[in-house]
Length: 392
Image (cartoon, one colour):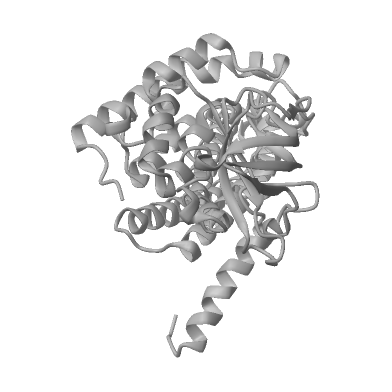
């Protein structure tokens, strides 16, 4: 696991990202909301800052941050609209980490430098129309044909797929194995014949974040494009789970950034808005909502920080990652609701950012594993320890 960069270097990176968020991203939020697109100029600035390579080792051209450092940086970026983070999020997380963790040296050398600079963009193609939370039930098939695999199937809600250069794609290579076994991971360039990318989905929130369906018809992929080489045939779901553990901590950091923004917006409004001749921040019931929000933010920060530190020490963290993702995203949903309540009628109006953020954060309790899936993961580990005679 990465030990990250030195303290002084990291402080410089975090400060640069914080200033970029406040000076460039937040002022551009309305443009993104109206156009459903992140401006190309901002994308180029993100590349120059190194945001596409936060988690990619320096030997491959990335910044080489530890997960603990990544959490702190993502929490800064996530104070702005979530669309900005989404532009580079797949390169940092689920789109690159499968290659980083289980890829061959040749696969790492070919793709990680391009992903780190943003020259190449990645997507993680796991979800299907009939396989969402039950990812082990995916139906996309990869059939061996000489020195290639022929892939047929479809994927749904794939982030950044309309701009991606490559897909880390999960397909069933052994139809006789049930559930999660029999699935392999492939690196598939999006220009490969037989791939059709659908139109971007229209969503409740997170405008500027692009998700599309993907259709695969007789897509021929060289066998050496299997992540980790052919010795990892039928091991793709294990790769996906390793990626998702890290991704769930990333999601917790995302929720933390949005929660901070919401609390700051609510605090500013509560001290300015007057009723009955005084700021509403003087009213104890308003103070209670602010205090509850701050306490939940602090708890989410502690959980994400602890889980990331454990990951950086090389510990297996499926339970901690699930706890952090579940708590942080659920807490941010509650904080968003309180922020709208503090704003009153103004909170329901589009001219105030809390209206947009309220819609944006709702998705966080669904993607990267729903809250209910996180509960199942947590309970599974609790019951496993109980069966082994261990105490919590």
